[in-house]
Amino acid sequence: MPSSRSAAAPFLRFTLPDGRPATLLLAEASTVLSVDGALVSSWDLAGRPYALVCGTGTYRRGLDGRLLWKREATADGPRLRRRLPAEEGEPIVDAARAEAALALTALGDAAPSPEPSASGSPMSRNSDGDVSRIDARGPTRAPDVESARVGSG
Image (tube, rainbow, N blue to C red):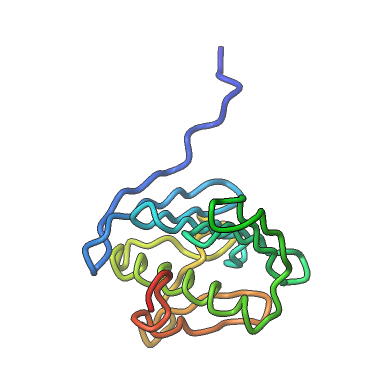
């Protein structure tokens, strides 16, 4: 009797070029990248990040593209739930894109295609070999990895 449960999504463990461990889950409707347990980013089939979790909180992207920042109450402050203006949200999203670019570099040419009919990865290489991705604004080149890393500064 066939199982009603679908096959497990591909799960890859690898090391980023800077030495940090990473995992990539290629699910049917999304791709999830975890970097060193410090950043988890979830991407839809079009390559748009829709959930980001890092040390500063959880960020959820709405259908309108805006980010909602949520943080649990801590000894340092109360529970936080705030919509971020574009200028505050952009560096968070850019940092996640930079981590995705590092993952693409680590996986090399074996990286999945961003086509929805393929694996749903948010990453690809253009004809020049540059890292790029596709989001609601169209194709964009990944930001400078060193200046956009989450938690740097």
